[in-house]
Length: 158
Image 1 (cartoon, helix red, strand yellow):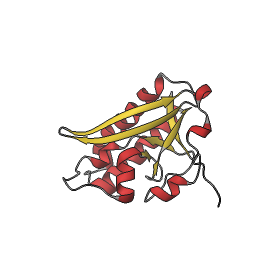
Image 2 (tube, rainbow, N blue to C red):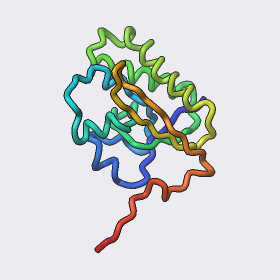
Image 3 (cartoon, rainbow, N blue to C red):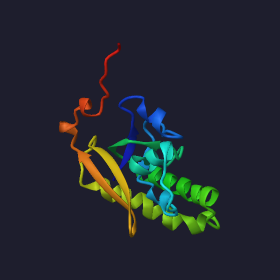
């Protein structure tokens, strides 16, 4: 079974997200966090999280890029429990047992997204608001083609 871990290719995520995910933590798209967006436009770090942030399922921080890795069933079960508790604490789900099926669906959807890719494949998410709600698209960069210079920010020190 595969899932995706947070990858930091530079320090930009620590600057653009209110709460950055920890390097190596397991992630899901986390688009559910934006289900109740109103008509007012997002700005700053909230806009960045909406536009291209994966959700870490341990710190509940955001990250721009994830890499596919193997996960054991016991660790996946722990993530589902953690996400279910988050649904209770952050979103008002009545209890962990009620939230667990939704958490399981979120984690299993991510596992399905990762299933057809090789380990170390990089994934990026992009979101936009449409007339029918939030639309997510995913982009993958296969491991052999993943050149870190594609993501590096180059500049002049002067």
